Length: 318
Image (cartoon, rainbow, N blue to C red; front, side, top):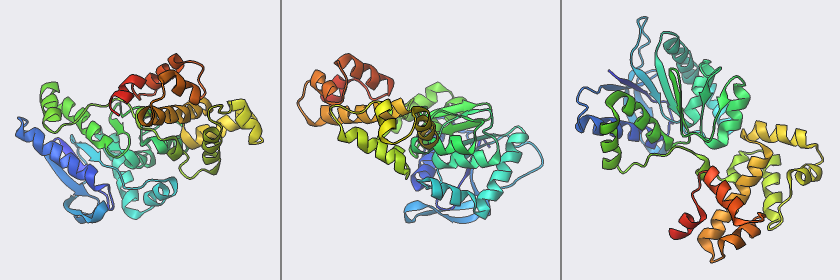
């Protein structure tokens, strides 16, 4: 058996079903020997999000080495308080202990979105590079200070631990795992068959207003920037208006979002530029000026760096 799909109560239903559909499609396309099992901590019927559910087998924790890769789709939690509450439930506590044992015995584990926090609780992210849904990156960095959190990455593989970004990055995670197991040719065929695009970064999907994740100060910073277009405040001006030093501001922003203050500022500016490019007939030079950049070249470079494509490409699909 190659994969053990572990389903948690309330898990993101699409993540679970997409995983199963991809595994079955891979088998139909030529990976006949591909085996997998759907499990949960206690077995039986497990309710997922959106009013659906699935029958599962009980997860067996055996003394011998388990050669399967454990795959855990997102938990269906979207903010920090919900993540912490979900991790405190008995089934999550049992699973994190099982994950720690599995990895210590040479097993592999893969998780996406908020399920990455199960790996953090299991202690297997220390000294590793990992990703999670982009708006929870700050929380992951806070909870596991020894982990290098890269919220730009769609998939991070570090030794026996593979992590993926926001909920639909579960498909990217499975493409990565199946490419390892079945080879690039079959996985390319699978991606074409299911109309799946390979995506390398989360950056172009980031919505600055969601980076706050309930943090009042980050919400205020975002509002301050948006209210001042076309002359948004500098980092120094933001710190002064908020009554703190730039260093203190930077520390808070990093803890809340996993990003630097200037990166947050650029995210807000680029997001506004994307909106203007798609909803107005302003020239690219005028759009750059509207969001506080002196020339269009700066805007083009930042959009490319943040994964949002070029201004011309955005305008072409309007």
